[in-house]
Amino acid sequence: MKNIASKELNYVKDFLSWEILSLKKCNQYAQQETNPQRKQLLMDAVNIHQKNYMNLLSYVNQANAQQQNTNMTNNNQGGQMN
Image (cartoon, rainbow, N blue to C red; front, side, top):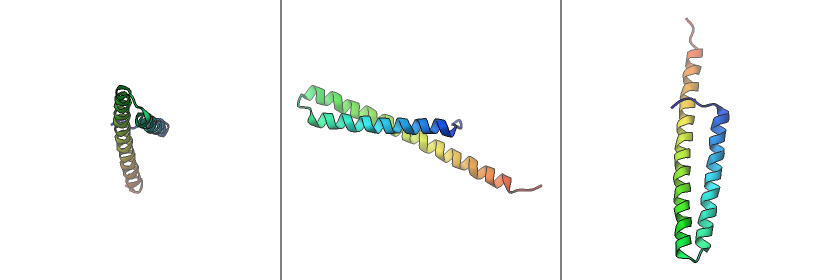
């Protein structure tokens, strides 16, 4: 995975917030819906937002792990003297 800037990572974290909000709203509307077809449509949207959220979360976790590894490597190399 290519290193991404902190600002870009914050954008992805914003996307996470939007996805979870959309998931919650669709789920709330689905619970209130009486028409089975509309309810299913909303539940499909819930599943899509959940999948998007999990994909974004995985990406953020990988980026954070990579960033931590890079920081640890840089710190270890910074302490060595030739």
